[in-house]
Length: 487
Image (tube, rainbow, N blue to C red):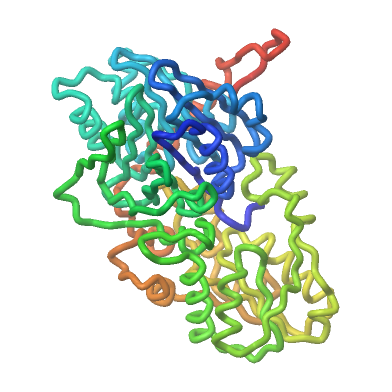
């Protein structure tokens, strides 16, 4: 059972460097936390495109010879966890097409809420889809005839899609980045010493390749990078609503990233401080659930004066349990992921801090292990409010029926966890820790206020039927000529 929501994707792009593919590899390596299911890189020298994708972690997919074959001074990369579309190589990104407008490759972070309607429309007009991911819809829209030229086609395409998207696109002459008008997903622009331009989901990718952060891509903005530099288009000048996913600050982003001018590490420490102000507990030690609770637990310790102890030791050779598509592997990872140093908690009143509770299964296991080790009392504190609503913008929160806080009272959850105390950070406390106002964020998973409206029953029904149909039909030959199922 997953205790944390699944990630969505990480995207990266570079224009103007002779080692573009290798730098993209390192960029994806820095963004590996955003998806551990598949990854891919597309590169071009302006004449020929090359693409390599695979299932697994970035280092497993790209060996030296493969990277050397991805020649060109321009590249985009993508690392993925499936929130729409099945877990299969056919759905790995970047996706690439050859159309009347030339070659186009795309990497997409997010989820389109009008994907089903657009796909039905495109299929009725003769489009043939090769995948079950909504990202392919964007390619089909870009390939449609357009009277106004290339820039007009880009604006027209992003104005037709709804929901959450940060995009990197590679054409024969350009690297393009785009962000939805609400700004659900992050996307930043950087520059290297040789003048190469870089796009990435998080600034931690810039640090690894020694690129300098320039600015965040604005919500609704399209940036076009070519030999002349960077030019910007605002596709939604009339759109004022902002809805950045606050869970980036709570959990998803790496703590060494900076988003909208706020360092993620500092925001999480402040969330922990606010948690201590809202929930004062008599305890002997504060223990984080590594690594997701480290920063908030530190903040709680600093504010409360209760000593901080790393009583749980994480096995870093076990992938994040919620990022593994197999339930068997998830269950195994939960058991081996953390080991408790019993001597640190025996006879102690313990505050244990984590970033969220989704289903509660692994949280219960942590409390049980603490009490079995002799903890006098265990107080569970969470550095965000209860998750009561599913996300339709690219985070794989379960449906409402599987969200613990949506179906059980506060005290019922506490009893299920066998905790002496259960406390959540308030919505106001979480928002205040960022330094921004509520109007800057999407808080739908907490309060049910969805910035972009949708019909979940229709979309889910259509998407699931397509996945089943694709699963019956899609096969390809493996290296030895045998048929293998793709979906």
